[in-house]
Image (tube, rainbow, N blue to C red; front, side):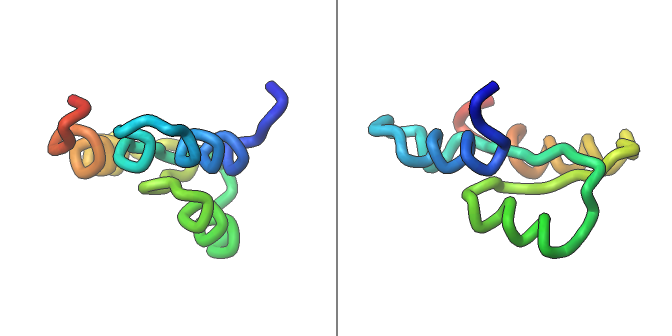
Length: 72
């Protein structure tokens, strides 16, 4: 509750854990501005999906970022 998604992502990426840089972090927001997408990627997020959620797009993003990773 004390951090926004960008701050939380940066904190996770900074952890001294072997998976800190590989765990998938996905943004889900109603903000579809290109600047926000760039900010999310710069913070270390792996992908970005906007609301309202398109189930097919959500499944594609999850498959791309989670299904093929060692974390799944």
